Length: 126
Length: 250
Image 1 (spheres, rainbow over the protein chains, first blue to last red):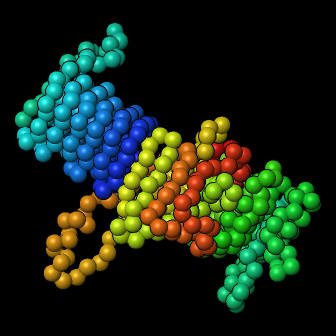
Image 2 (spheres, rainbow over the protein chains, first blue to last red):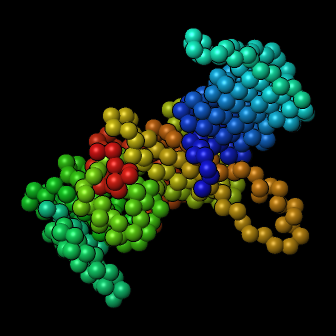
Image 3 (cartoon, rainbow over the protein chains, first blue to last red):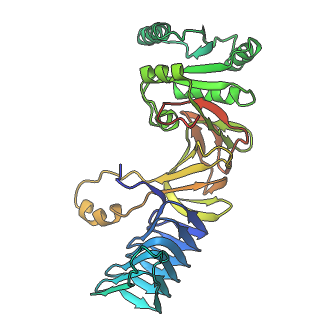
């Protein structure tokens, strides 16, 4: 049993057309044409090809994404990943070997209460 | 008082286990009316008898086939349903939170229940434990749900009704698994990379329609229910199923 309970998994060699909306984590290893929405983490595996927007708390990409990615907290592009689309997040990490074609927008944290120190958006490019 | 429907024992070992369960139920103070189906008296007949006698809790004691039969029979009635499985079963454990018969008997005493919707095959046949379809390699399938369409090839498709949250629509858990064949010899190295691909899928839907290349059997608890194409849905009215303390919502 995996340590993290993954609610939705799309296996390699599976094609899915339509919307995946899930409050839990989503792992994609196959082909998806449509939008992907999660309140947790979305993992795009090495074999995955996505045509559509992704919205989640955290997004990790090791495969291909043809569409925008919006992550409340963090986007991580792994080596060999390919993203054609705009990225919007607070923290962006692009590993060597990743290909990113698009614009990135770094958002300030939503919680700007008087007691909380203001965090700076963070970009990591190796 | 509880009404028990036992699976008829067929061999000496099963007689012994049935006697042990009956004795334990008496020891913990929940021995009620104990019955078993016979050629002249079906599970459905026994359920009608229990409803007629105003039993509010009916317990299935046996294997997954009997458990599914009793669940189907109870669907139209407003009673609480309990399970004592003869053998440990992951599907029953997923539903009730208990695995061994003694644990299940102890859970009956506490009578904590949660609503569980039965799955509905082709708008007519109810199922509690997974409905499965085994497809040979290369056999294509298409699964259409209100939110998305999934296309794939081969593997075992398992569809299980989920407990769900009270007041919410029923959900079905779809799992597609591809057992890895054991290969020896020269090809094993070449095939290693392909076999290490994350092939299995898992997602939830409200309802689904499954079509396959060719017709394949839909099995529930070892028995053939129908063949593909098949539709899957959940019953509107949930069943009140006795579960372990940790699983219970009520």
